[in-house]
Length: 147
Image (tube, rainbow, N blue to C red; front, side, top):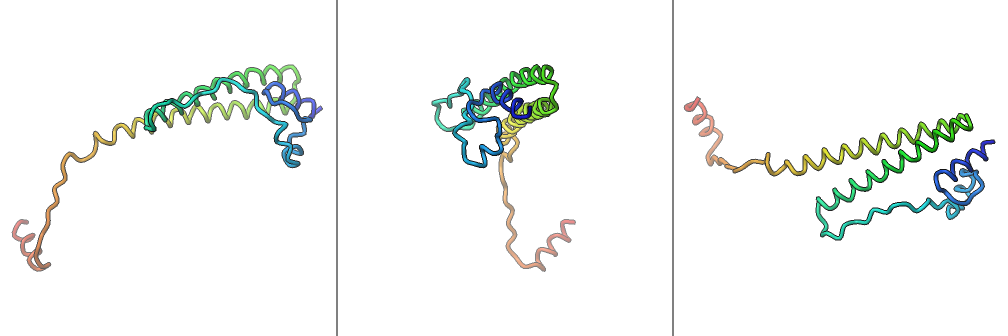
């Protein structure tokens, strides 16, 4: 029954090949059997390497991951309802957690980008260095007379 569920999950998630015994296949080196389904690819912009293009690329990838995760959650919940198998619900829970983490990473990306853009505005406008040339005794005398 567990192998059937693993095969059904693999088929739904678009993983081709394999027997359903993922642990043994990976341990025995049959990684070629597990090729993910090809979906919408996010192409890196042809812009020069800079912060904005990297931000846009990362943001698009996060959105794509969230959308694909939502589709996977919908499907796995349908599968879990039909089969009523605890493993299907466990996988659904893991998917929900993973999509939530990606969503948090998207928010973190927004916050980091905002901080990076604010740094020049909050920096010092001018720097004035005061230099005292003299002995410690002279410095103490000057501080006492100003105090």
